[in-house]
Amino acid sequence: MNNIYNVIFVSNSIKYAEELKRTAQFNDVINVLGVARGIHDFKMRMTQAQNVHVVLIGDDLSDGSLMELLEYLQGFEDLIVFGIINHPESEGILSMYGIGAVYEKQMMPLDILSFLQESLTALSPEETNQRQKTYEKTPEEKVESFHSRFAEGHESSMEKNHQDTQSSLLNARAPSQPFDESLGNYQQPPTSSITQRKGVTTMGVLKPKVVCFTSAKGGVGKSAIAMEVASCLAARGNEVEINMSTRGASGEVNVVLVDLNYAFGTVAATLPCVSDMKNPPTLADWVLKIREKVVRGLSYEDKKELQTQEHPRYASFIYKMNRNYLRFTRQEVFSLLVKEPKTGMYILPTISSNFDVAEIENEFIEIIIEELSNFFDAVVLDTGNNFEGFTQTAFRMSNEIYIVANPNIAVTVIIKQLLKDAVDGLGIDRDKFRLVINHPQTNKQSIDDEAMQTQVGIPLAGGISHDENMLLSHDAGRFYAVNNKKKSVSKDITLIANMILPLWNVAGATKKGGFFQRFLGK
Image (cartoon, rainbow, N blue to C red; front, side, top):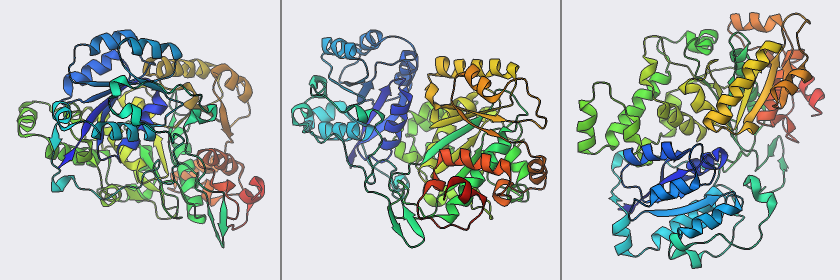
């Protein structure tokens, strides 16, 4: 029998929320039901969820104010509330309600979860019975252990004693001592310097990423660039052995390309490893598998309710569940992907044309990306040129978002609107966005790269030189950059790939010679 505490985090601090949610996957006591960006989202989740024990609240909300949120929470009994804040004035507001808080820069998500676990397990049996439902894990719920990208090799920057705060989270106050500003990005510190062995280099701080390639309009070469960058990472990952933070020992770098562009399915149409398969696994297979896991984890009453729905919606039941029911084993994950034999890259094709896209709820896409990030060092998402549910979820889940565009004055207006919708509408951190300029065949362009970057107001990741042979290579079902390393466009692709995972910056890595090594000084 395990005591599990269900937690909802109310905050529009995207980066912190995502790391908290992912880190919680590996905690046996704290079950994060979800993240609400604002009051409206939170009210909906509280209506749908059952047995919420802890609400963590931030002071950056997509809608409503901190005072409104606190007033709403007054209507709940036996609910533990704790603040994770950014602004000093919020500490005073929370203290008026008897609610303790810490600053995001003072405690990393892993520290917050450890603090919660210690404090909640210290409650008396009577308090535990009042606040908590006890779950008994079933055999189906047991999955193989995961390697946490956050837990391994982590040395907490907060080695303080929490004894004064464990008695009651409601009375906990933000620590008054000064904190190190360098901890603001709450990334794990290097556990060791770079060490070299014969033919192998280990880097304990090379952090895995989820990245997204998107565009404000179609026909700009977005999918082609996403495929080239992903294949470039995978091929380079086969050449070096890196100690990624997802592993306890050195090994190959695993890369997966996810096609979320259901309107075209460019990846499946281009790559023979997918198109030549009779029934390749797609997003639809993941959806069906998630549905099975949801049904297995539901109570008898919830199963009956689901069966009565004419068009079943599973998302509302996901919020009620213990998240462990939705875990995928390594065998399950890799059985639902296609492997490209030459580069070693894995591919998740988009849904087939006969599958209703409306049946794929956004929460399913979120689960898929989360599960893939447990096993892959680079998850590369190729979205459609739209702002629909798939794309919005990809934006939320990504560490970096690359907007691919042709150098055109009219396009800058569309990109600025996309940024406005994402930043103001969804609360996406603007710092996530990068600009990739894909140059046309002719040298005539209506705006130069620097001017375009200035217009859209986001960093320029790089420009892609035009090469007609790359298009011809894709028509023949072959990657171009990894097979033509001396070409200018290959250098451009490699530089962007190296921004995502700096595999070309690894000292002492196995080298086979060629243009890339000379260009990058390796």
